[in-house]
Length: 480
Ligand code: NAD
Image 1 (cartoon, rainbow, N blue to C red):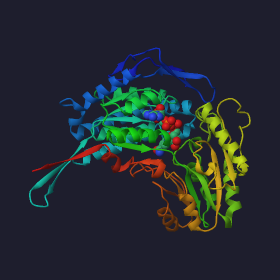
Image 2: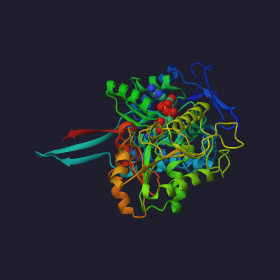
Image 3: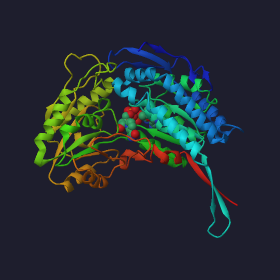
Image 4: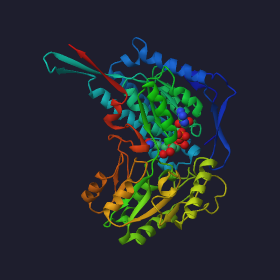
């Protein structure tokens, strides 16, 4: 990607930032060089973004009062504008966070437009008012209204997809959205801003405030915000949840995970290596739902360890912009150091290293980590309990299925999970027993038409599907 420097913020159309000298610099995880910079939004800029977003929904004839047909048309225009920029979007994301370009083309470049069209369809089809016969006679008109101004706080790992998990249903509910991207991945938000302007969304319906956590915290507690939707770490999610609790402000939290893959004794893993890669290692292990704890039956233990280790060793590690790359660098030096620390701790805890563990040959520059597998991992050890957010897998042995389910559920998290079996219904029976928000059978692929989210420390509420639309609406009863 050519170097990108921006001087304005999308607050009320393009405007100059309150303090132009405050900048965010984005560093390439491959070259370790600065590849772009943008103004860092300050509290004054957030005030302006929220004020514009408020006007957009509150003004007579504003976004909230439009006919759903007009919301749908605007969402479809934005989808078309994003489609025109799909290559630029994929490249912007890959070059900032190390996501392999083939993943970025599927997710960051395509899913946002698909989500906009999906929710546009809902807006068109679903009446916002419904008359119900009253229990004691009469009629009640039940009306669904947008909550108002939404603060959408997104992380760097899938910056566009995760923004659109929020943006698409919120806009289709008649809300305006202030997006706060993560400082590690902000350049892509300028591609989005251009698409928003080209699609001629009314001013303030989408505003963008690139900034770090302090300004994010200011936005969360801003009196002009009606709902907060956050994706990120459990620690930050808890802090945000506390603030929203105190303010009685609706909040959706999509947080961390340490999901389990339960390999049943009749699994055919060799036939599913592509799905295994997608479910356990996609995006360099920087994916919240991936199954990074592989629970293997003792009856086939060594075979499972060998399959997973061979898979890790076979992966092509390199430049994320090369279409053949399967594993790119992780996002920052700090993240690379955290992953190396997790690997060293697992070794000290007595886990058996069966693949990787170091820096890939010839890639001493940039934040690369070898795809790594540990066998004989104790489920209570930190490798099995803590999220690594890198290409590191732990294999844990189990005796019978009851023990496998107990081990899977012995986690503070509950976001994803997978079951591997040649008998689908047997796998579904195991999936029903897992305390988690979603489970994949012989693979894991998020379905935008179905709800996604976590239990326990993995979060609160659901994104995607019709359920997400409801989370940006309140219902009002008008007794006729
Ligand atoms: P992070 O929590 O540090 O940051 C996420 C975003 O929140 C960033 O934009 C950051 O600036 C902002 N932020 C942080 N603290 C804040 C606060 N107190 N108030 C307001 N904003 C704040 O997480 P990260 O390192 O950027 O992302 C990695 C984490 O995100 C991992 O734990 C991962 O599992 C999780 N994640 C979860 C999902 C999901 O859907 N459940 C998806 C992707 C990532």
